[in-house]
Length: 158
Image (cartoon, rainbow, N blue to C red; front, top):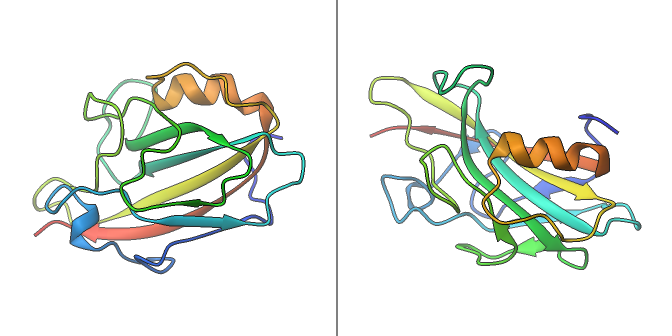
């Protein structure tokens, strides 16, 4: 399928599309992943993945752009909602150098950043190994992505 938006819808009670992400979901707060809910997934989806990426961040490594805050995959096909601070799925590596969710925290004086929360529906069951970086996960998952969409939140430090 490649990377094209589908009819899936991703929402959060924590913030509206293009709205401000509450501090408790950032590195300046409790650093909890926000509650997310999706609908409109294809009936043949066998698993889901969620990614949070900041394209406004300075380059972190050659060949990539932005900063990955969350890579979560192997989410069962019957899931349509992740609770705040979820432990669901398999955590991948983020650009903070650990696994799991690492909330927004743009460099001081860098202004407002946009955080893209993506939900991906895959036609492959939950079988990806733990700890994959965003790039590693996308290389493995891309042929199996059958639907996707995003929710964009913003955050400006302090």
